[in-house]
Length: 214
Image (tube, rainbow, N blue to C red):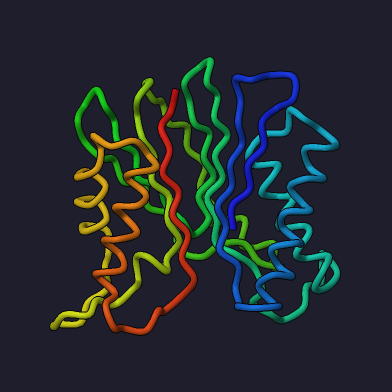
């Protein structure tokens, strides 16, 4: 699932979170509600809350839902995520990585920078917060971002030898559509992924986000 919010008093900041919950169907939907409600509460209480505060709020919400915060239930419910606080005035991304990464086309360098995340997202166990990473990433107008869940990266292809799609093929597809508008790039990526999957079973839910920075 993805969540986006612009500061009501500033058009120069946008917050965006892509998260991939454990489980499917009703369990996954319930977790999605827990996390989206946590984000809404965080920014309703403090419009200027930063990325780290938002992710801490998400972790606290899952701990409170599935056990006391200091004695969480012995379960693995949670999510992988990447959270972006986009400051358009400073042209800077404040990013939290917790299981999902980011691909950044840097127009001035004509190259894709890949930011891989530490393994593991957030869960009811507060120890998970030790492994998340925070980075400040500068950007230029016209740079492009690609975010995907691991259902894309881990999908096995239809042709022998059977291999996961991985990062290299994502980068190649990303680069091949940089001349297109984001909407056209998205359609091309969906077609590329469908051909790659072929008759193979879908391994996981998938989400793709492509957008330009201004």
